[in-house]
Amino acid sequence: MVDTCAAEFAAATPYYYSCYEQMCEVEPTENKKILILGAGPIRIGQGIEFDYCTVHAVTAIRDEGIEAHIINNNPETVSTDYDTSDKLFFEPLTLEDVMNVIERENPDGVLVQFGGQTSVNLALPLEKELQRRTDLKTVIMGTSPNDIDVAEDRERFNFMMEKLEINQPDAGYATSQEEAIAIANRIDYPVLVRPSYVLGGRAMEIVYDQNDLERYMREAVSVSPEHPILIDDFLEGAVEIDVDAVCDGEDVLIGAIMEHIEEAGVHSGDSACVIPPQSLSEETLQIVRDYTRKIALALNVKGLLNIQMALQDNTVYVLEANPRSSRTIPFVSKAVGLPMAKIAALVIMGQRLKDMGFASLDEPKVKHISVKEVLLPFDKLPGADPILGPEMKSTGEVMGVDSDYGRAFFKAQLSADNILPLNGRVFMSIRDEDKEQLLDIARKLKDAGIELIGTSGTAEFLDENGIEMGIVKKVHDGSPNVIDMMRRDEVNLVINTPTNKVSRKDGSRIRRAAVDFKVPYITTIQSAIAASHAIASMKSGESTVKSIKEYHKEMA
Image 1 (cartoon, rainbow, N blue to C red):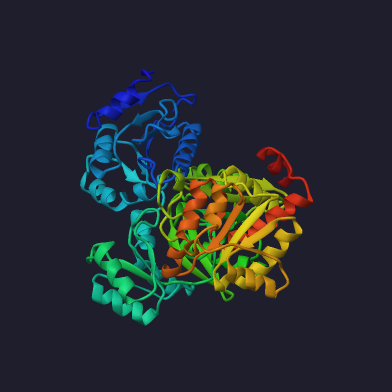
Image 2: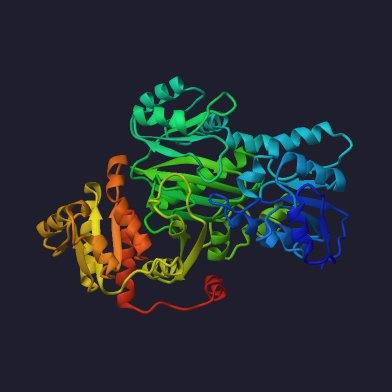
């Protein structure tokens, strides 16, 4: 057993080849060694959820009597605790450093699925290096690097989707500004643009016109044949859907189908979501299951698979597929009681889902409702507009569970320190596109005894529909306005939904003031609907307090 100061020493000497060994609870019986690539330093876009997957994979492998090694260089994670794995290599996640470990240990296999995009990006170059090194027995286990590349490479993935006859948004990829403009004009604005092979939606943006696109191509990214820009039709108003599954090459186990609470345009890592879905029809769910199985088998997945879809006008579109761990694996595992990362690790080790009791199963049917909500860092970023978009901004997530959707959502907001009020005053400033949906929200809040205030346009609309609202000045009209009221602790919740790039700037001072004065805030109409439901549910009944195991027992 090494000294606990070893981790600090290794961190201070990144080029020193260091490892930590300790006794295992399970003595290796197969004389087999597996190296798992971690996620690297935790930062915005690279969540601790991948560390959860890494640790669960290690646990499953060690329980099988196989020696498990980890390479990761974040001292604040469980995977780098000195007693988690048989050996820990505190090194950067680069090809050179991974190869240094492989040359020393010559493990039987390397797992790249559990460290998120950072480890998956190493799959192809690592395979090429291993093929060149005939003195090493190491292979990449699980989904092959070529099949991973089919999912990552937009051109190859689109071709596969066409063969499977699966709907996708109209899309293209560009290697120059001229190509990008031509594709965007063909698709029609707005379009979603992003680089390929990126983490956390980095440099992803919704552009509304050619000037916007030219600025993006000039400032945000560099394009080349090796680094094309992906351009997708932006599905406005669509409901996003996430699926986590495990495939062994023959059968597919669906862990859960998640419905995003925010509509398309918010990065999946920033969007709240719910298990089971609350508004999707059984017909839609069956299409989602069918697409998931088709894609998993077409990609020859052995291990984890995450698929993102969208529902618009009763049509399900596949946005992307990631044959790796996802940020939602911990949420799914806890919500439905299936240890998805452990199951995937066993599949990669050669076990079959049928032999484990799973065979092409639909997602478990749960009696409770689970809501995932994110933690946002805007209180640590002075001046930043706390608006959600296609580029990921959250730094963590929490979960609320109850037998009622509204109360589960309330618990999730409570855990995220965005506490919804059960009395007091709510300020509303809503874009025109959302005003019809505002009516039901306002009625629920009024029935719950909440006082409503807002700017003149919102107030006039509600007044025309028989709902009373107090009027406050717009910020640029002088005092007293809502910022003054927040400063005096006279507002208990802010609901502000911005629209396109012009209107987004108009409400930024209000949203920023909500963060600065620690007032709960909501920036999407879908979250506002859920919040009104949550407040009404909490006013009408008591929330339940149970352990997660008690909820799982009720499923049995």
